[in-house]
Length: 238
Image (tube, rainbow, N blue to C red):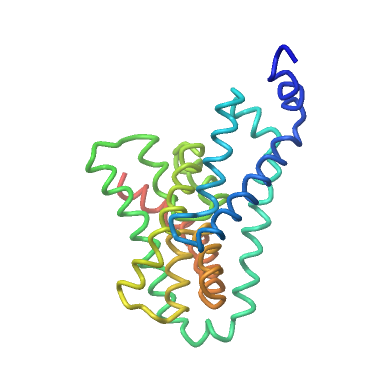
């Protein structure tokens, strides 16, 4: 009782504690988002990050200690990415009917994501490892981290950029697409998945099931294309 953090210090040594904290943070964040009517700014991932960051800061816990317990979630990113083939297969007939415009949108979107990030950062004086870390930021995390490492970027920085990209996309997607008067759920979903990967896809599913399915397709296809385009663009331009 003389040290109010003694019990916490003991529990913090158990790796499963941080997995539990991560899952509880997301459950709380999802509840908050639901209570706020799924407002774009009330993104569950953003809220969960703020909760976990607060817990780590208050408990004076190092990130390495946290990750040791929560790395199972990180491991599951791989299978989750592979599972993106499921919506592609389930909507194969619908995809075939719009294959040409989807292919054009995929190439244009993937190139724009890579070139705009590199171009803007370069114009502001960013160079070296930090600049390279930006190239795959619109791909889903497992692919983005692998691409970043392969082209000489810093995977840890890329992970942060991927999360920020996803959260930003999830927040601005619905208002922006409404303002542009884009009503086709297939186009809306595909654009969100291409630009904002998994976090955007989760948001798209909450808005409309068709948008969610095509967002998953856009996310999966963009991950594959980014793995080829990012190294090529970096080699040719940098």
